[in-house]
Length: 264
Image 1 (spheres, rainbow, N blue to C red):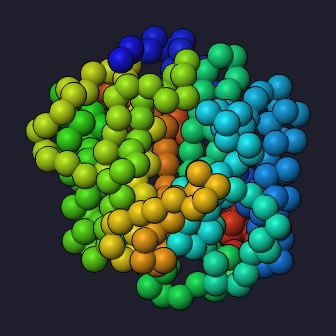
Image 2: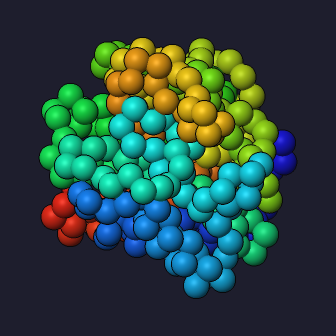
């Protein structure tokens, strides 16, 4: 683990804000009937136009700019010729490298009108992200973040995926420590200013079990029930975590897109 300087944190923030702007460009175009590969193309062009690189493309062989995961797909879904349908949920994970530093953020979108229980899954998953971030202050332990996420989801009848975790981030896309979405209060690494984390609850409507598709990447729920994913990159501070990524631009675009249902 290494702890970032203020100058490094500002460079990470720059990358994270570019991620948020990329999400916003994609959010403008999400609608029933659009192929997910077109969303990937929009993101890739936007990132290159802003003198940055897609962080995921080529990472351990991943072939696309975005991870686009629909309905029962948890994470790492491949963009392709699938056309989004009214009632789908689509999780989009985006990473960017600029000036030698990475930014990372994910958001799950409601395409058209989704079922009430699916909407609740997204709402609770997003809330749990902020419950975890509330615990990301100096002096706490990593387990305080993990416990808060697990407790909020499970108390609302949902389950957290355990095989996939959040992570440190900075000069590398994935750095130590791992940030599980389950755990015990008071356990794990002590949180110190300068630590930058990507916190990312992945939450299933049904059971927590997952499996992989034959492409070797796409993770789906074993019971084929929907899954949601929200992610912020943050840095530890003494009294309140500093959220380096942003949902504000994304949610402004969602509200202005009549083909999407806003979560707030």
